[in-house]
Length: 42
Image 1: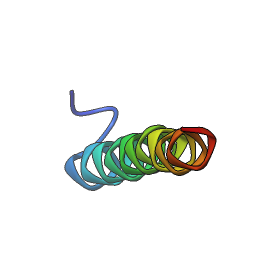
Image 2: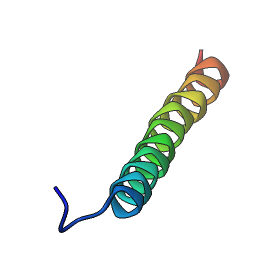
Image 3: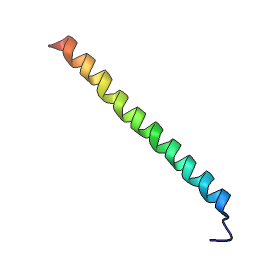
C-alpha cells in the first residue's frame, strides 16, 4: 500500500466514481429517449 500512496489511491477512487457517474447518466438517458419515442408511437 505504501508504494501506491494515499493521494494516488484517492485520485484513482475519484476517477472511478466519475466514470461510474457518467455510466449512470448514459444509462438513464437511454430510457428517457425510449420513453419519449414510445409515447409518440402510442
